[in-house]
Amino acid sequence: MKSSVPADPTVLRPMPGQPRVVLLRPLVTSPLIEVGEFSYYDDPDDPTAFETRNVLYHYGPEKLVIGRFCALGTGVRFIMNGANHRMDGPSTFPFPTMGGSWSDHFDLLTGLPNRGDTVVGNDVWLGYGVTVMPGVRIGHGAIVGSGAVVTSDVPDYGIVGGNPARLIRTRYSAGDVARLLAVAWWDWPVEHITEHVRTIMSGSVADLEAAVPNA
Image (cartoon, rainbow, N blue to C red; front, side, top):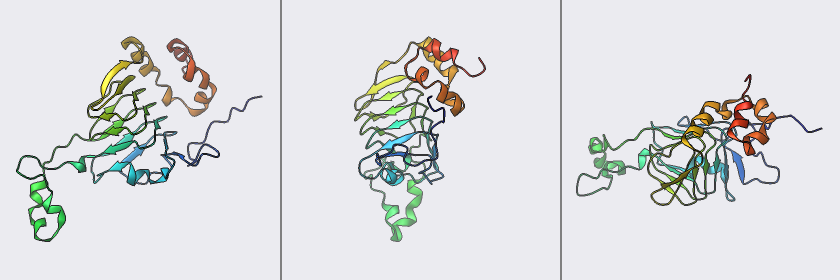
């Protein structure tokens, strides 16, 4: 008889013998990063350094929000709003941050471009070496190809690639995307997800609708 015990979202390394894979929710400590259950990062060097090596220029107050069941390939990086420099004068150099009397001019760094929180939806796959720019929203079920630089929002169930990333196609028709968003399987109780893993991975939209709890 097959086990019906769900995976444990609190285990840092969920794959036996694969220390390169970590679940992000039990790893992150920054109050500026929110990650849903079962989203993971894969890195052969040190995946536990995700907060410092993969989330860059994160001085706040903008947040990085990652949904549930997301797969982040090696080298995925999020560039946060703190990377912005002033561009309306002759120099882009941030003199006030270097200290000394230059810090008297910190007002010159106020009002820099700010696109708000960076948000990754649920069930998103970010390929190897993807770079996500500040304030981008990546929709549920989206796929971002390896090496892409995401400078603008990605639609739900969209597939994008390139630099800057462009929409290649959508995984489903507009009608089916609406149906999938209504089902929102990632919000199901984990026990129910466990029962319907095969449908979630390989079933049709209709199959998924038939599996909705209490449907």
